[in-house]
Length: 315
Image 1 (cartoon, helix red, strand yellow):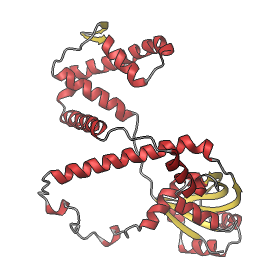
Image 2 (image 1 turned 60 degrees about the vertical axis):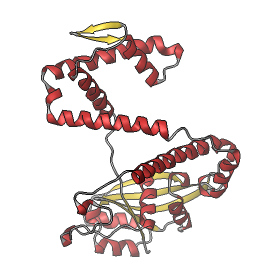
Image 3 (image 1 turned 90 degrees about the horizontal axis):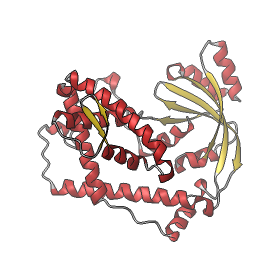
Image 4 (image 1 turned 90 degrees about the vertical axis):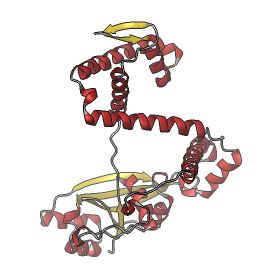
């Protein structure tokens, strides 16, 4: 049985800690400049104060309903105390003078100011009309009216184990179980898994390719140092109507408009600003230095990019 190969890339992002780092950086910057906190003092933490203004800002940022603010207020005060005791010790250790911390503060400051500008000038996008929502619904049947849910069986293994010999075995195998038996005989480690994925989870181009595959067809997904051999065991129709999808579509269209507005504003600013690349090699379109043969990699095509975005949802 011939197998199909899809490539995929996945970026990892660190979240949560970054938000705390920005908060600490902003506070360190304020402390470093000797700025006085405004608002009625509620708690003294060493020589510093937790003010009513700080608490109210945190309540507003968390969007706490009025009925829950009394309880949330106490939690926020304790959280601010936790942050302040850390800041007090950081200042005592003179971390605000550490070059890496100074650099992080400047970066956080630049990001906050740039974000404030974009929120002000990109503006709030208009709500999509009923016609626009209906049009998006009609143009994406696999996401909505013709949505399908696929049952998949898969074998996860190291990409380094995906040898030419194993690929030939996959091509000749009549089922994923035959491949599993081959892996067992040859001492190749793998993990079995059974998952369900909807066409709404995947890029439309990938969904179209997968639903067109016959049941039992083997295909491979590569994601860096891991690869997954998959087969579709069942496909069921799981359509959703316009009424139940309207809010989701409206939010998606608004998010798209926000992104497009930001992209347009950045393009306008770049066009109005003289930008000079002092290192010509950094300029767009500049030919990069030749890489060593072992490090060379083929450029991804737009079709491969679409596969990559879609297949990431399979994991």
